Amino acid sequence: MVKRTGDTSLLIIVLRFLAFFLLKTEGPRAFNVRQVSILDDLRSDIIKARKEENRLRIMAWLSTADPSKDHNIARSKHEGTTGSWLLKLPQFQKWTVTDNSFLWMYGNGKLLISTV
Image 1 (spheres, rainbow, N blue to C red):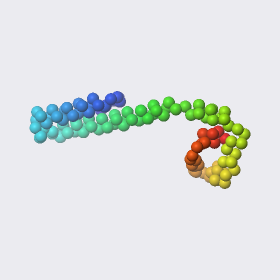
Image 2: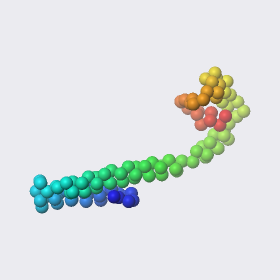
Image 3: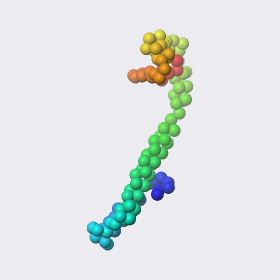
Image 4: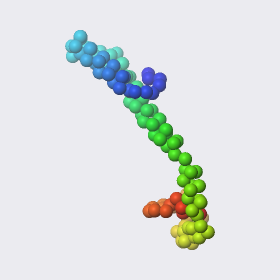
């Protein structure tokens, strides 16, 4: 089993080499149940390692974002009436008192509105 993530291309090369070697040295009937099981385990480990690499890359990408910077910049642009129209909307008022609901906002200006 692959214990740590890293570049999986080496594992892929080893897996392909092993399969090629067995075919060349033993012929098409070279793969007994044990060898097929080993190859399946290697393939499974490679897939797991790739998934973990992708997860770590995404986590690294997400962790570099600092939303407080953007919020503080938006907050400095906030004026007393910013977003007051939103607070008066019936949809917003209903959302504030409804359990398990969400508010979908699209378009420009969401960051400034979020400072209300």
